[in-house]
Amino acid sequence: MCGIVGYAGRRDAAPLIIEGLKRLEYRGYDSFGVATLGSGIELVKHQGRISGYAGSAHQLHGKTGIGHTRWATHGIPNDANAHPHLDCTNRIAVVHNGIIENFSSLKRDLISRGHRFRSDTDTEVVVHLLEEAYAKEHDILVAVQNTVPLLKGSFALLVIVADDNRLIAARNQSPLVIGIGDGENFAASDMTPVIEYTERAIFLEDGDVASLKPDSVEIFHDKIPVTRPVELIDWSPEAAKKGGFSHFMMKEIYEQPKAFFDTLNAIDTDVLPPAARHPSSVTVLACGSSYHAGLIFRYLVEESCGIPARLEFASEFKYFPPPVEGLVIGITQSGETADTLTALRQAKAHNCTTLAITNVLGSSVSRIADATLFMRAGPEISVAATKSFVAQLAVLMQIMNAWAGRRWAGVLQHAHQSIEDVLHIDLSAAVSLCVPAKSIFYVGRGPFYAVSLEGALKMKEISYIHAEGYAAGELKHGPFALLSTETPVIAICMPGETYGVMISNIKEMKARGAPVIALGCEGDSELPDIVDVFIPVPETHRFVQVLTTLVVLQLLAFYTAVALGRDVDKPRNLAKSVTVE
Ligand code: G6P
View 1 (tube, helix red, strand yellow):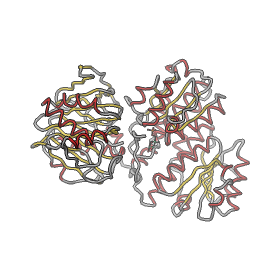
View 2: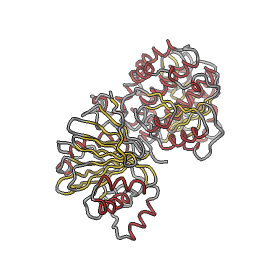
View 3: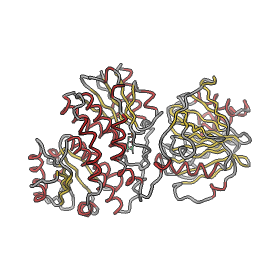
View 4: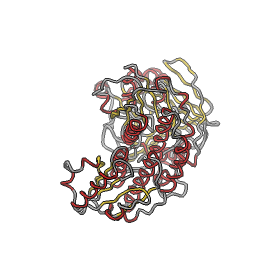
C-alpha cells in the first residue's frame, strides 16, 4: 500500500512528483505529501486526495524531491501522519511504503535519546534514525546504508537531505523501481508515474540501496557497488490515462478483449518448469479477485482436465498450512500482495515447484517463484480488478489448454470476440433493480458460482451495496430468510448439467418474492418467462461463458455504482495493492 515517487533531474521536481502521485493513487489515497530540495527541505502534506489538488505543493522549489500517497496503517489519515516525515533538524525527509515491524522499540529508544515525534506513524522512526546516522557520517548514502539493517519489516524508502542533490532509495520487500531518463532519474513504487518520461527501468533487489543524481544511478548491496539489469517497459503512457472514458474502470472493462487476446498469445507454456507440465495435482494460492480466478480455475481444471486442484486463501495458508506438495500456483495481479508472497515462500520451503501469475514485470512475486507467467493487461488503475482478472483467466485457460493437448486452442483464440459482444449489452432494467437494493445475492453453480462471487465482490466494493455470492443450492440453507421483494437475486443459469436445478432454484427464490435477474444463453426459451430481467450472453464454449458472464457482472456493478454517484475508481477504504498482512 502507499505509493512513493522521487525525482532527481533538471526540471522542477514538484509538478513531476504530483503528477506521478496521481498515477499511484490506486495504491492509497487518504493523504499525500511532497518534499523538495529548495531552500532547505520544502514540504507540503495534507489529508485527502491528490487528484484535483491545485495547492501550494506545485510551487515548491528544487530539482530533487520525493512524494507519497498514503493508505493508512499506523495512525489515522491526517496532516501530521501524511508523509514525507522530517527529522528533528528539518533537514532530512523520508517517504516510506511498507511496515516497520520493530518501530515501537525503536521509537522508545529514540524518545529516550531526546527525539521529538510529530506523527503516529511507524515511518517516523526511520527519519530519526537517519538523523543520528547522518550526524555521525555526514553522508546521506552511508547514513541510509547504516540505518537499513536496524529496520525489521518491509520498506521502500526514498530519502533526501538539505544541501545534497542526491535522491537515496532503499528496498526490502516492498516494490521499488528506478526509471533511467536522459539527464534525470526517477524512483517509484511502479512504472506508471515514469512511463511518460522513460521506458528504461531497473527493479531493485531486496537489500539494495541506490543513489540517484540527474546523470547517474549507483546501486549498492551490503555497501558493495552492484549492477542490475536495465529492462525495457513497453507500457504506453496512454495506457495510464483515461483516453476519453469517464472512469478508468470503464476503460479497463472495454480493454478486456485485448487484454485477454494479448495475454493468451504471450503465454509460452513450453517454458513451464517440468513439474508444471503434467502435474498430478495443483494447489492455488491467492487473495481477493485473484482467489476468485483461482476458484474458476479449480472448477475448470478438475472438470476439463481431470486434475485435482486445491485452492487456499494465501492469508490463511500462512497460519494454517495444509500438507502441500507438487505444483503451487500463486496468482497476484500486482505481484506484491504480502499474503500471497509469504504463502509462496512457505510453499517453496516445502519443496513445491512454484509458478507465479502476475501483471507486473519485476514485481516481487517473480523473484520468489520458480517460474512466472506474465499477463499482458497493461497498467490497471481502477482499484477494482477487471482486465487483470480476465488476463489471469487467459493465463489459467492457456495452462489448461497445454495440459489438455491444446484441445481448446481454437476456442480461446476467438474468446475475445465474445467478450466484445457483451460490452454493449443493455443493462438498464437490471441496474434499476439493483440501485435501490440494500442487499443483493449472486448465485451460480460450478465455475459460475465462482463468477457470482466475483460479481458480488465488484458490486460491494464500488457501489457499497451489500452483495453476497452463493453456490445456488446453498441459498435455501439460511439466506432465504433474507429474501424479499427488495432483495434482488442475480442468477447465472447456463446450459448444461445444472441448468434444470438452477431453474428450480430460481423458482424457489421467485416464490419468496425476490426479483430475479438471470444471465443465460441467447435463445433460452424458459428463463425470460420466469425471471424479472433476462440478460442473454452468446451461446459459446463453457470457458468463454465464464468470461462473458463475468464481464456482464462487472458492467452491472459499474453502472449501479455510477447511478449511485460512487467514486468508482477509488472506492472508500480500499487499495489496489495490499502489501500488508
Ligand atoms: C486488493 C485489490 C483487489 C485484488 C486483491 C489481491 O484487495 O483491491 O482487486 O484482487 O488485492 O491483489 P493481487 O494483486 O494479489 O491480485
